[in-house]
Amino acid sequence: MRNKTDPDAFETFYKDVRGRLLLQTWALTGDLPAAQKAVRDALVIGWHHWRKISRLEDPESFVRPQAWSRALRRHTARPFHRERGFDEGIRATLAALAKLPLLQRKVLLLAHLTTLPLDQLAREAGITQARAERELQAATAAFALARNVPTTSILGLFEPMAAELRDLRWPRPTILTRAGTGRRRLHTAVGGAIALVAFLGSGVLVTDANGVRPRLDALSLHTPPSAAPAKAYPLTTDDLISGAQVGAVLGGSWTTEMTSDNTDGDGLVLPCQQQRFADRSPRAALMRTLVSGDKLSVGQSTEVSATPATAHAAYAASLKWYAACREPRLQLLSTRQVAGLGDEATLVELRDWNTPGRSIVASVARTGVLTTTIVSEQPAPGKQSVRTNTGLLAQAVGQLCGLPDGGTCAGTPKLREIDPIPTGDHPAMLDEVDLPPVRTVAQPWMATAPKSATTNLAATRCDQSVFHRKGVTGDLTRSFVIPTAKLPPQFGLTQTVGSFGTAKAATKFVDGTRAALAACPKKDIGTKVSVVENVASPARDLTSWRLSVEISDKSSVIFLMAIMREGDNVAQVGFVQSGAATITDAEFAALTHRAADRLRQLG
Image 1: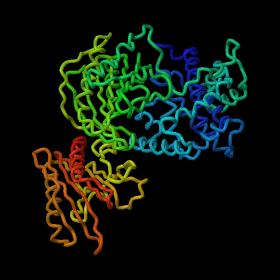
Image 2: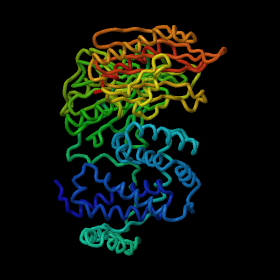
Image 3: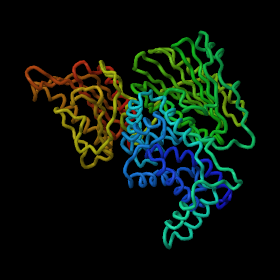
Image 4: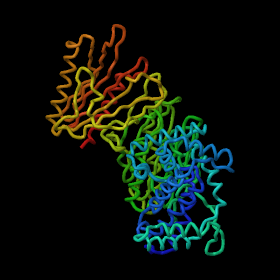
């Protein structure tokens, strides 16, 4: 274990993080002088608390918020000014960032200029993971639009800024450690002001201990994986599936498009991939993509973790990328557990409803300390996509299990459909990835934040069901809308959930809703009700209806509504269409079963 007060360890940390922190704080404020001073202040504080933060898995996560908050204070304390002397591209990037609300700017920079997984990104931003996903989606779209680039090219916009910083000269580490030590000694008496003033007065055009002025030649936009172990792991390109193997399973001729360790660019190669690596510090990693013509593609990512436990964490993180895919208009169709492949394996099937439609299947397996992901893409509907992807996963696991610290090899795969993988802060509720496409609408669904169900947004005027009542816990409601489609305000999908404490109480509530719907046409002659589906079993109780409600002599509103029970948990789902912007009864019925599957996560 390293010495927690060792100046050498801090010097290594200082030289590793200073460039990234400066790039981030400059992008955050658009004010380079404020960013420089803030990063120096934060690093002085870092040495002050080095005994504590050196024990952290990621000490940078302590220093970065210090730098960001100080940069914002310095920047807001002075009139806004445009940076001069930089090229037009840098000025345009800073201007586009300045247009974003501060929270969206923070989320965007954390997503693109750090390697934080989404849950840690959300914690650092001080918001829920679900909100972080929404803010990131909005920020990414707005920033890309302002800079007139595809969202996949955002990281490249920061490269010129990074290049601009490479000639910057930094204080030698001993100046920071002296200032930090002084700050520590004086902190309880007069705070850190004296130490910081002394540090800032020491000048910036100084030399390193060896007389060489430090430069940012090795500036990286992302935190690199931790240093390689003394003995490198023997993962080679021969351990990845080849074009011949893919052809044997899928047929046709396949060409290797790319093979790399995925350290260049933004690292987001596969569909739905959210981070460069699923393991924050892999011992080794390789990635390969293969194509057949212009319509078929296969990608493989393989990572080596330090232990089976960290490999399991990487396996779970990889699965969540696909289980909660945030690419617009991608729908989760099914989730299957795969027995007989490695130590654990799961397959996720998605459908891309953008034009042209794609069938995407991602299967993730772990064998010992190795985790591998196979993603296949083909034109929809891709009827054989699940079977073929399982065959490719078997090939991949078979090649990896014999490596050092590998685990179970590949047998005969057996697939079993399971509930969707829980994701987000409210796993008992529907997610955007669950929703089917809307006819005549090409824009994606967006979810509102769940809130207490003081008003049941999913109820119809026939039932007026109330979830916010005595004896009900966990009552939440949310809506899904398509704000960019210019649809009437009544259009949308809503869901309300709650736990009724006992199955008997939940059953009574569901039966009451059914009775209200059955009686509605007699009480309201302007309402027509027809049953879409009715399922009754000891565990699942589900009914869905189509309602036509006259609002005038010439117009009616069409509702689809469902009530469902899983044990003592109840959910209600409602959909209001608008003209041709609708979903079919079959699609709504499938969605209600997905809602029932997720409802099991409530309590």
